Length: 377
Ligand SMILES: *[C@@H]1O[C@H](CO)[C@@H](O)[C@H](O)[C@H]1NC(C)=O
Ligand SMILES: *[C@@H]1O[C@H](CO)[C@@H](O)[C@H](O)[C@H]1NC(C)=O
Ligand SMILES: *[C@@H]1O[C@H](CO)[C@@H](O)[C@H](O)[C@H]1NC(C)=O
Ligand SMILES: *[C@@H]1O[C@H](CO)[C@@H](O)[C@H](O)[C@H]1NC(C)=O
Image (cartoon, rainbow, N blue to C red; front, side, top):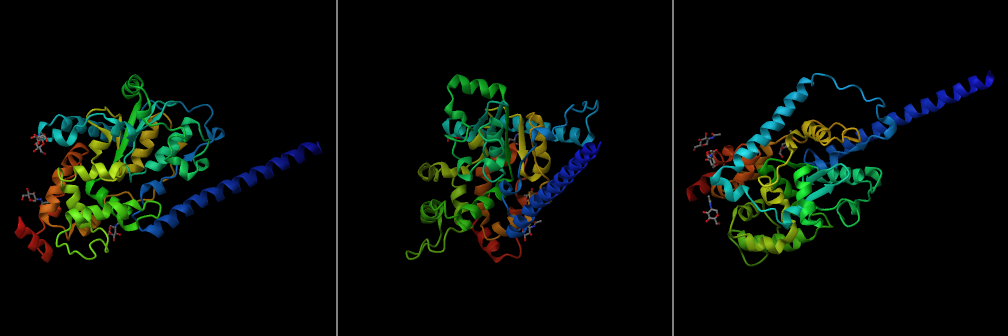
């Protein structure tokens, strides 16, 4: 009898310790979020915030709760948002006057962007700065090369020879066709102008030490070709200005040769149409960075992996479109350059239902730069 009570007591202690441990662990991940948010004030790429947490098999609700006969109202509403996106996408793909901006061939560049999870029959097209690293980690774990997201060494996340997450381009034509026509396919987009601001800040302002080529090779090439009022001395000393970058991006024809030289790095600013061929490949879901809080769980569920992986809450407001920021960055850019940029990226704006940035083009007062530049028009 005494043994029985001792055993019971021991079990109680183990349980208590487990509970405390769980609490501590949760608390720490919240703290991680907090520090990151404070440290980088609202401009954190979602890749760093969305931390997938693997649900260990023991956490799985063992007898799966019976599916409720009626879908929750919010879920049904979100389903209709997703459906509308796909409807809009296919409607815009049919618009002949946008063909040059929306249609691309499914070439090697596109196949290189798409990652394959055969085990769960998922294809994921990578579009930078919208949480890709985390999605890739999730798929690497699902493919089975590593058992948790934390186990994946950082330098392996993008090493597709070794991380067990192959590119679609590594398959034979028949294997590619089969996967494209039968797998669950998704990618994530965000407002094109905010995307450019994000790429500019990340690649040319912050310029991480391990990506020196943006500052040393790409920036000087853009400056030489696109900076107005060039003086011979110190042309590149102050670094790339957002204005230079916008002029380069908006130069549809002129930048082709440069882009070939820049190689894969252009993935940070070429159109989503060029990255993922959304008019040629019939994607199941197009997620929006601005609504990632709803899209991420939706995608996990739609891909039938929500029982295996989950996302902690994304801090509110972080992924939302920030018009003040866009106005700030474009306030010194001439209307002509903004118009060109919009024309070049109009396909993305329309395919994914983003508002055209009229508010940047109709501004007339206050800013002397705008008055001056509007005289050029
Ligand atoms: C096609 O796109 C053009 C350019 O954005 C737009 O003016 C036109 O209304 C669109 N046509 C249809 C049928 O949606
Ligand atoms: C598309 O591009 C081709 C070649 O660059 C050009 O001839 C054609 O006029 C363009 N079409 C539209 C609708 O802009
Ligand atoms: C929007 O951007 C501006 C300028 O970069 C910044 O000061 C502001 O805090 C941002 N707002 C939100 C809600 O993140
Ligand atoms: C901007 O101007 C155009 C025409 O010049 C007009 O159609 C549009 O409604 C204006 N947009 C805003 C946000 O004022």
